Amino acid sequence: MAKNKTLKVDVLTLFPEMIDAYCNASILGRAQKSKLLQVKAHDLRRWAIDKHGHVDDRPFGGGAGMVMRVEPFYKALKQLKVSGAKTRVILTSAKGKLFTQKDAQRLAKYDRLVFLCGRYEGVDERVATKLADEELSIGPYVMTGGELAALVVTDAVARLRPGVLGQKASLDEESWSDGVTKEYPQYTRPEVFGKWKVPAVLLSGDHKKIAEWRKKNQK
Ligand SMILES: C[S@@+](CC[C@H](N)C(=O)[O-])C[C@H]1O[C@@H](n2cnc3c(N)ncnc32)[C@H](O)[C@@H]1O
Image 1: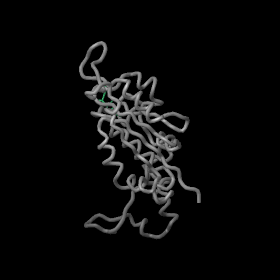
Image 2: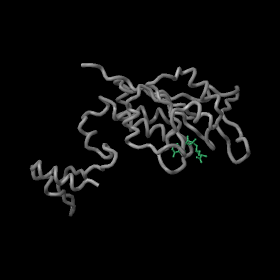
Image 3: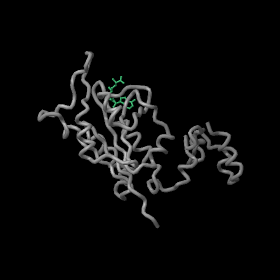
C-alpha cells in the first residue's frame, strides 16, 4: 500500500511553545508520531533585526501600539526555503478571509503550510502583499495573536489528510462536509438517563428509518 504523504506545517511565531503544546497531544500528536504530520514552530526572534531580538516598530503615520516588521518574516521564509506550488504561506489576520471547511479541504491538498502569526497591533502590510499567499481570519473578532488561528487551521486541515482519522466515513457525514449541512444529533449509552430518553427510532435497528430520521434532523 502506498504510504500517505506527510503534511509539513511551519509556524512562525513569537510563542512557539503554544504551538507545540497543542500539536504534540491527542490526534495531531499521534499523526506526528506516525509521520502523517510534521509541525515545526519557529521562534521569529531567530530572525530579529538586532541582537536585542527586536521584531517590531512604531507605525508610520502614528497611532497606538507596535507593528511587526517585514524583515524577520522575509528572512525566516528564505532560510526555511519556503517556495513551490505545493506550499501555501498563510498570514493569520483578523481582517483576512473567513476560514471555512471548504478552505480546510482546499488546503489539505498542499504538501506544506506555513503560518505567519502576528502579535501587537498587527503586521506590516508588505507581509500580506509580498510574502503571504493568502490572509485568513478564524472569525469576526480580534485576538491577541495569530497562534490560535494557526492551530485552528492546522487542526481542521490535518484531520482531513488520509490516515489521520481512523474512519473515512466519519469525514463524509459530518457537519460542513458539503459546505452547508450540519450533522444529525448523536446519542450513546445509556438509553435512558433520568427522564431523558434517546429517540426510539435509533434503537429500532431499522436502518432505513434511522437514515430518514437523521436526514430530517440535520440542521
Ligand atoms: C491584536 S491582533 C491585530 C489586530 C489588528 N490591529 C486589526 O484591527 O485587524 C494581532 C494579531 O493577532 C492575529 N489575529 C487576531 N485576531 C485574529 C483572527 N480573528 N483571525 C486570525 N488571526 C487573528 C493576527 O495575526 C494579528 O496580526
